[in-house]
Length: 142
Image (cartoon, rainbow, N blue to C red; front, top):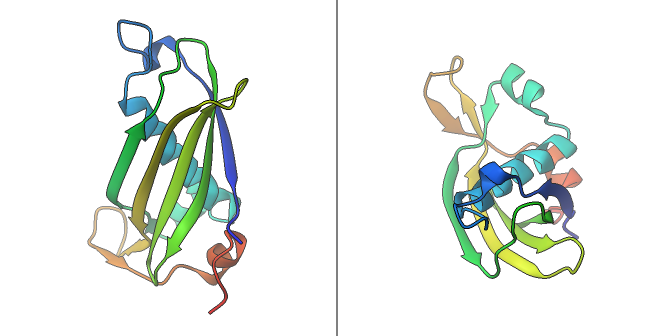
């Protein structure tokens, strides 16, 4: 069963457009942060990723905007890995207003688990997602 990650965010003024409602790229920033948080919870925080020369390039992202929060609203990003490949995975995100559970947005990100060939800035190569990550995030047993 997929593991559900939860990340809370308060809509800050800098996350809003001049009308005081969410500026759409904010959803993409939140989804990105939620994916990295899931990976950290699975045992691969940013420091370990860097030390072991791993990274997670984004290969696709989409978001459907359902409703707009306004400045100061408390929101929650709920995320889980929906699709597993050998070196790729797709994370589904749902963003809701905390007090009413009103849906705000739904989106997904597809990423590839990669390793730098010889250090940051060198070419990347897709590698098998570590079993530790797969198990921690509820991948089906192969």
